[in-house]
Length: 339
Image (tube, one colour):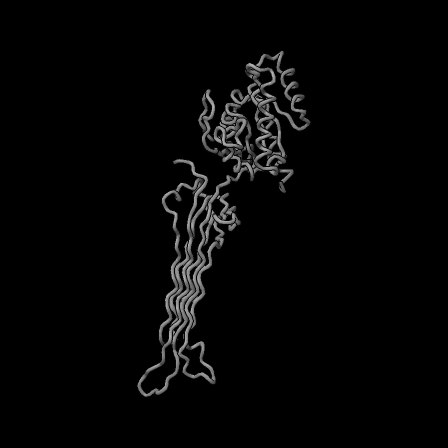
């Protein structure tokens, strides 16, 4: 199934039913008085999180959701039926905002907890409601009010503990394949990852975390170059970023440092809060570097970035250094549950 992380829908809650004017007419009961019933409330529209969905693909074709209208009141003080509510299932991590104004209506981060996004109209009143000591035969009633309606934007932000950040072909997909059961495409050309992938890293019983791999960034991503920055939203809910760097210098000796700086610039341009998240450097593909050159190469990269945070040396393809990194990530997440 094609990965879809944005959609637009129209929702309308049901209008309230109208009250009516009616008088009791029965044999042997002259001047029976008013008995017009109230209308029913309109149905409301709710969204609810579901573990069974992971994209917004269902909303490519179904984009209009209208709740039931309340029934009109009837004689003999009978109230109209209440309109039927609508429940829209969304994948966890979906943010619902108004198309006009961008106001957040709902942030779906839990299952089975309906959230109201459009309230149904209030019922109209029958003429029985207007009866008083001075108005014994009221001939007035009120219509039901209109239900709320909105054009909404759905934006999926995957929920993961750890996000992978890096240039295309830095080894992010190979890393997530090495630490989890996820099987994203891996090849020797850029942009093999075209949509986010999630993997669960299990270290022991009740000790696991979720890692998210997004398509690689390149310089100018904030301006739409390459795949742009549309997938960076999927890192906004993470608690830790692993910046994976390909240590191979290629044609330019400072290529790893230059690439890392470009990534950080694009990250900062996109979202200052995301840029400020805890971030660790992960120097990858060390299996392709001679043993005698590894220390000097890694130290040059760290010095070039003026980095004083955690640094890990790994080879995602061979698994070297993977276990120690995952154990430290788990310990960090357990010690900082409020992140």
